[in-house]
Length: 138
Length: 77
Image (tube, rainbow over all chains, first blue to last red; front, side, top):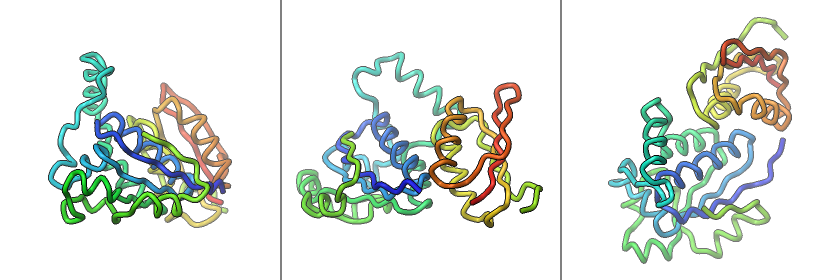
């Protein structure tokens, strides 16, 4: 069993980057690797309970052609990123934490967040939890 | 070990990493030594299932392709 933990700093809040984070997290979870996701700024904003299912757009380089390709994949039944993350959490070992600084910046509390988010932590707690995990910044 | 399929996972039409995620979910309910059948159309699934089984200790005992549909029979470790 390859059980090296994965830590993802999820800063971005567009649907393509959120989906990439969900794919990386669920792939690691399927291998039995612990996954720790730290939500910052726009990544955190996307996890607001009242907005999580919204269209969060794509990065600028996607353009119209990229948007059409992503829309087509969705129309074929590709699971949205939050469902992929929910499946990853069902596999076990996946923890999602909100960055407390970002909570202050966005002026939100834990009650505003989707239940996918397990809690709030500062950067020190994140580093301690991540340990010597492989780290991704998305 | 019995040679009948204990659990079947239909992951046809699902993009990466869903075939692996659904299989990882399904094997939890499969006793050791039993067989899981997976159907997938994701072209990455051949390398992904090879890597996943190597890492998790499960074994691919049969692998075929028919008209773009990959079929894996995996023995639960």
